[in-house]
Amino acid sequence: MGIFKKQNVWWIDFYAGGRRKRERIGLSHKLAEEVLHKRKLEIAEDRFFPKRHKQFIGFSEMADLYWELHAKQKPSAQVTCYHVKQLKAFFGAKELNKISVPDILQYVNGVKEEFSAATANRHHNVLRAIFNRAMEWEKFDGPNPAAKVKQFRVENSRTQFLENADITRLLAACDAEIRPIVTLALLTGMRRGEIVNLRWADIDLTNGAIHVLKTKSGEAREIPIAPKLKALIESLDRGAGDMVFNISTRALNNHFCKALKLTGITNFRFHDLRHTFASHFIMRTNDLPATQKLLGHKSPRMTQRYAHLSKGHLQAEMKMFDAGWTPIWQDSGVGARSRKPGIV
Image (cartoon, rainbow, N blue to C red; front, side):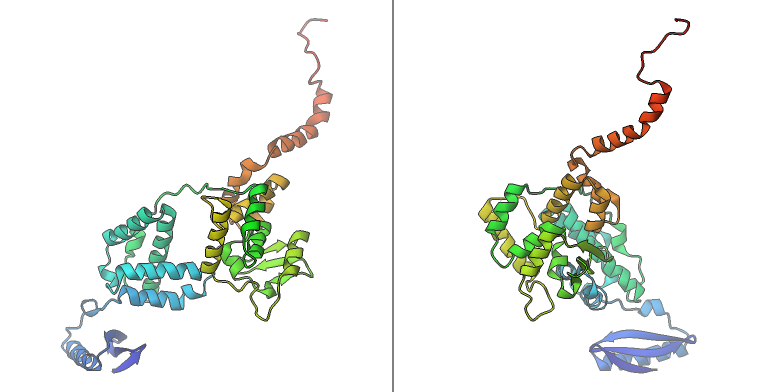
C-alpha cells in the first residue's frame, strides 16, 4: 500500500480481496493519506465496496488525455483540436458520470442551430470517441451516453464546382502565397489538410507520383503527376524546410476567402476545389473507378454523386454492349421483315 504522484495528482495504491486497487485522490497529499488510512480500516473490517468510493475523472481532464494520447497523432488533428476546445468550454470539469443524454442533446442541437447538421455530427463523433477512450482506459465505466444520441440526417450531395471561366478568375484573384496551393487542389483533388501537411519527401518526380500519407480514411493513396502538375511542382521554391507549403490552415482560409470576395464567387468552400477536380475529371474521362481511387473514397457510393456529370458515358457503354451482340442478331435474322406462319 502506498501513495504516489502522477501528473501533479496524488493517487493511493492498495490491495483488496487479493486484487490491486488504485484510486485517484486529487491535489492534496494529506487527503491521500487520510483516504488510504480509511481504506485500510474498511478492508480490515470487510466494509470496502469499490464502486461506492470510485471517483470519476472530469470531462476537461479526460478531453486533454484524449487529445494527448490519441487524437494528436491523427491526420485530422487540427480539426479535432478545435472540437475538443469547444467541448471543454461547454462541459468543463463536470465528471463524466454526471454528463447525461439531455446535456449532450443540448450541445449538439446548439451546434446544429449555429452551424449545420454535418458540423454537429462531427462534434458528436469526437464526444463519443472521448467517452470510448475513457472506458478503454478505465476512467469511466459507462455506458457511453453519447452513443445513445442519434446523429442528424445529412444530405451529403453537395457537389458545387467551378467552370473553366470561374477557375481562371479565382486563380487570378489568389495572391502568390496560395495560388500554387489552389492550383494543386484543382489538379489533384487533395483535401486541404493533405496539402497543408504535404512534405517534399512525399513527392516522387522520378516515378511521377505524389504519396498522400495522412488521409481522412487513414489509408495512403498515390496520385500520378501529369505534365501540368509536374510543371507546378518544379516551379515551387524548395526552401530549407521539409514542408512543401509553410502555411497554417487558418491563414490559408483567410487568403482563400479574400480571393472569393474579389471574384464575387459565393457559397463556395476550399473543399469544393476537390469537387471541382472530380467533376472535371469525370466529364473528361467518364471513369468513376479511377475517380474513386484518386479521391481515396472507400465506397463507390461517395463517388457516385459525380456520375450524372459524365456526359454520354452510359450511351457510349451501351453502344459497346450493342456492338458485341451484332453477329448474333444477324445470324438469327433479327431486323428482317417478319413473316406470318403459313404465308409463303
